[in-house]
Length: 186
Image (cartoon, rainbow, N blue to C red):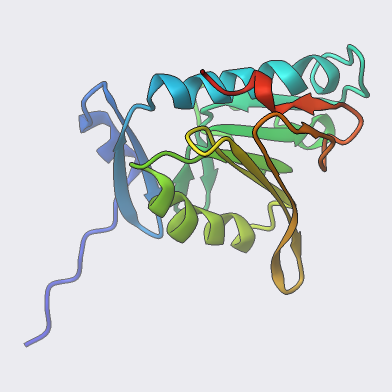
């Protein structure tokens, strides 16, 4: 006798989650994780402060981007919540008020933590590749590292690995130098 088919998760399933949890739907599976730690959110916020002025507002950089922390992104039946995501302005949807963003980001950054690293690496990264997200950054605030990937026809190409207090110019934000030491809590 065949097993009963597992029910695919739907957006409405997210309404039943406790406030201290984040839900994502990847390949029909509801994945629930606790809200990020202080170290995790500090790294994400600090990175947003480093690239936002230059790329979102054009202060000291080219502008032309929309950078969002913890946005809901709907890619077909998948609902992803990257720690940071960026879109070139010409690709960012003008009005989707109250709905997840439907456009594929031009860049995503996942902040790794002990509770999310496996999900990020095994489930989310292949999904980003499937939808042709051109750039992916993985930050680990415990190890104080940044890995920069670019999507190529064969898959993710590791473009650079940086650590501790390195000064970084990395695609797609290479016009601005990022001091990694500013991203980590002591």
